[in-house]
Length: 114
Image (spheres, rainbow, N blue to C red):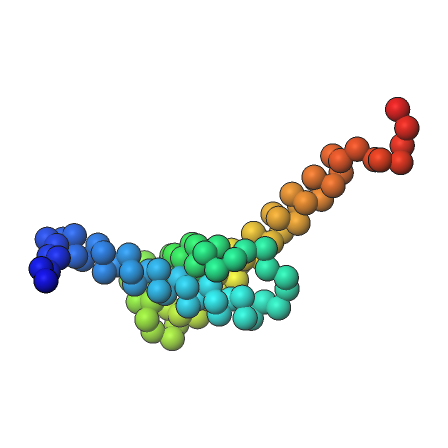
């Protein structure tokens, strides 16, 4: 059986991608557990919203602490990632609710005659 070797730079980016997928899934799942509303996303959506929220939360944390790099695997970094995921999830829920209200308002009334 042959091994699949990547260049060191490519291996670094693959590892980074896998870490963000795992970290985003963990923070997205934590955000869904903490927000007991009906969720408009499935598992893949949770991972995507978790990754986006993690990046946003860690960016906000690094801006709040004067540009010092924040490590996502510390307690403060994980709390920032969960907070970012909660904000992104709430924003997505608000957007979905608005879209469904707009769609309901655009539907023609069946009881009204021509």
